[in-house]
Image 1 (cartoon, helix red, strand yellow):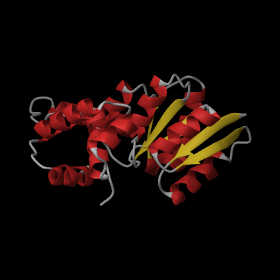
Image 2: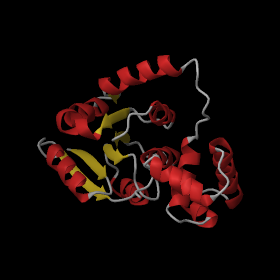
Image 3: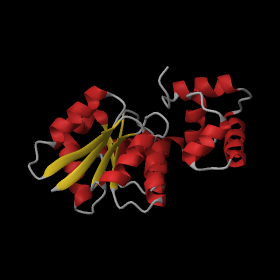
Length: 211
């Protein structure tokens, strides 16, 4: 029996994913998480074969969840679900050791195939996304002025926008306060911002948090 953990902060999405997973008699949903911190805790408790994780979750996004599990040596494959077509997000996902990436809009048709691929030790990235990323890369290669935030900087910005202090961010991400401050300053420098309010607006615009 293969164990599948579902992590999404929307109950209706979790219910839909559970319904798809449970169409397979040899798969079982081992737990449901509503934020990144709970997802990591449940993964440590239930040791699922696959985690289906929404990218945009409270406390820790899907990439940070994968990074944490990798650091803890949890041998669980992560399938990231996202609503956003983003070259940067896919690049950061690969760097975080994620081998599965699927649009939420494709989940009904392709979730089973994606999970099967990961269970067989094969990566799964939706073709539509890969084609778009190739097109965008060619179009933007010659004129790309914006500096990109790392996944850790995005996690810090997300938590700032959720109202966490540097100390609580450090506790959540297992970083020192000084390191959090460094990531915060780096993000603000790259984004050319000078206030927390600007970071919050950026996080809402990039859908790191809900408005």
